[in-house]
Image (cartoon, rainbow, N blue to C red; front, top):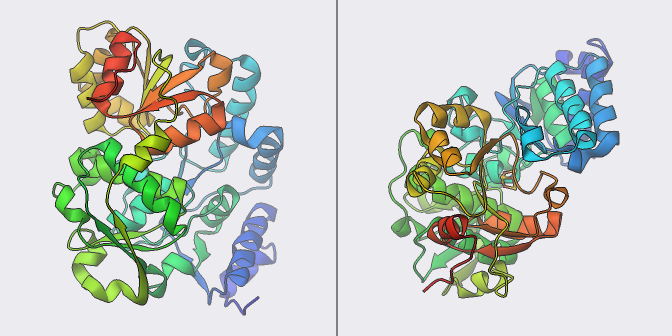
Length: 424
Ligand code: F3S
């Protein structure tokens, strides 16, 4: 354990001057700082908390949060929530049992008392309400958001745990180590791409192949920019580049533990600092083909009947919702389709008429949750299809479903026909 500098206010928090809720939060933040050798604490501007679904936290988690709220813990920076296990407004319509819904609602009411905004989304970077500024220190827990925020927005965050992100939000600081430091942001892997990477599914497959090999490495992509449209100045609507990058980060983080990647000439720090971001002795990896990833991620080739098609992992952007809406407008779906997103994004999609297009065809634009954190098994769903790399792995593991993974066009076809169509 190292010496950790705490200023007078931080010492006072630690000694309980601001009540037991703040004291507990400072104990967590300071302990992490000592364990990881942080010199001091960094003020944060934003926090994002994972571990929200009752499916994951159970009764013990609900009791823990309620106690923290009763002890007077209150966040002091803008703080948002990851998805929970159901949509708050339509859980009955989704077929969620009351035995699940009641404790889930109790959990988010405790978060509300703690001052946390009920965004219930894994894409805080797509919400203009986040007010993020390049270079800010933040405390985010959702691994896919950490990868996007660090890499595309040059935010500085470690991958916080659920309690540590909440603790950081309550004290307004986090321990300054890892990705908060310049040294922690230098690449120790150089990645070359020698095959086409053309779609959201391809970017997920790429993330799988790399994540499996690099663990928690920090990546330098020397030529991936050639497969990406330009990054828009405002990424909050998603767009062709944003949608590919959010799925890449989710797969890198989900199959490995990547929290930061640089793309030569493309991501902000790489564009500003160039190859000085590469550590001496960085290892090299060359990706020749995505086929090995598809062979693993599209794990059940014998399955053709699909119970649920799910789009939006990480949560769907406006551009993804628009694409699905245009594909199903005026048609009748043969099986369940969930486009999962945050409630604030859903509101904007509703204003554009896209929610009505999808729901008019028989699908759902589901807010607040996703097919990994919802109790999918209890809904009688046995087979799923997706174009999202992270979902392809997490849903079978978390919900025991069989999975087809492929292009968005195959997913739309499955929603319309109930059958998976093999890629040509
Ligand atoms: Fe988000 Fe659920 Fe995927 S939380 S990243 S949509 S598994």
